[in-house]
Image (cartoon, rainbow, N blue to C red; front, top):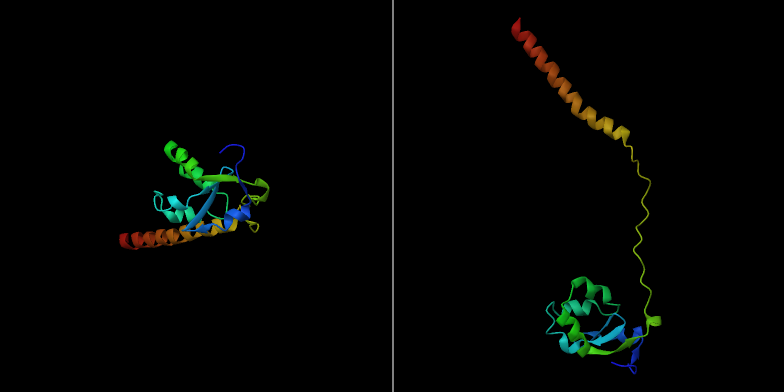
Length: 134
């Protein structure tokens, strides 16, 4: 593109989010992929779902071929003003209530639920064996 590349703001790009007018941000560049929508192997829904955000991660996660990367130059229309792109937030796990790791009382209950019926069965078998032999 050279040094005279047009610079777009994030807001400029986000309004182009329709099948007949679709722009994406990938690796700091702005791409008008409107003409490519019907030809995209993943379908136009994939491209539309990446509008309104930096689509770099989505693009890289798919593992595009070298020919796909070369094809991108055809659709590049400028650069993105990085200062206008919202900062990505890292996923923060929700706070969990305190969890009893020991679970001793639950463990004892489970053991008793197994042993008590087994003991009753053993006693019943013993009584049956004792009464049968006499």
